[in-house]
Amino acid sequence: MYTYLLGAAPKYAPSTIMQVIKSITAREVFEKYPEIKELLWGGEFWNDGGYIGTVGEGVTGDIIRAYIEKHGTKEEKEGYKQMKLLDL
Image (cartoon, rainbow, N blue to C red; front, side, top):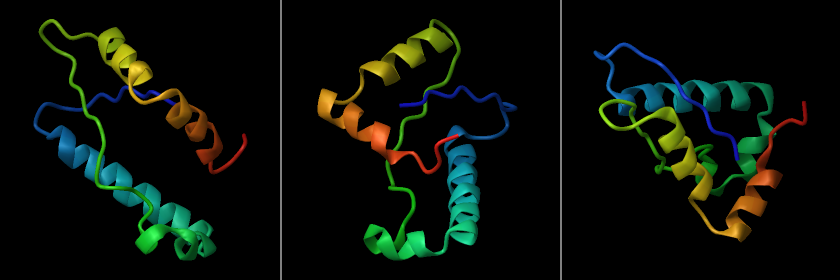
């Protein structure tokens, strides 16, 4: 599983930022690999869920990273390893 911390101006809502990221990445993947859309459940690249944590009073990047690393079962974490689009 990959953990990324992203910085943005406070005027942008975290949910809006995530929506933009999902939209752009899905469009780019489908453009480069159109056959993927046929293999996906309902043709959707991203599911509706996700986790967004903000860094601020009492919350650090390390706390958010620890939460993400502890989230999910051992089997789910093993499954994530197979979800890579490209081996770079």
